[in-house]
Image (cartoon, one colour):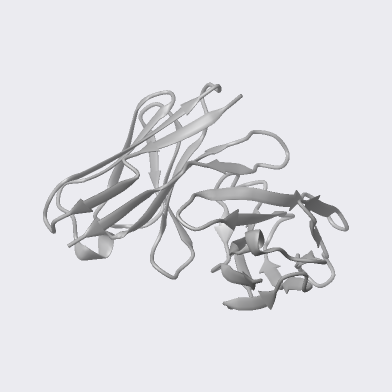
Length: 113
Length: 113
């Protein structure tokens, strides 16, 4: 069966520090992968998606970047965090087929102080 | 563009009460519709889905019917439990945007004993 894992689960970082959140999928090959952000009290915003190694599409301009160095690995990064980067980050993979449903990881909560 | 509108929360109910969460959508294509649930501190889980008009998705006592004429996908449960306390998200995807789900803002449901 397919599983998706994110880490770290919780992170507290000072403004201006770097960030790296990692997401790994198991049990499937060449998945579409996605990073969403959920700000406090708000809905989900798609940040990046990737259809293959080295292929990244950005949905919104921001202080973050994404990379896909391996087929089942998706990384969210920042060189210098801003207060506004605080939020709950969710990685997801796409179940192919007519339904196109996403399966989400456990999430990574980032607090920037 | 595509969008999802769902009723604002929080919705507070007593155990065994009837729950309805309204969701309407706008989409240029023929979307698939989803309800996701997020329990406190966790990622999102797919609750149910419907891929074409008049389809009814159901799971764990929850139901939602895809109504193309009213562009709606309301979530219902006949008798809620305390364990149903969570945030519920309505979402859609279209054939030309697989995986790039458009989410509603989420509705928090609180069920009291």
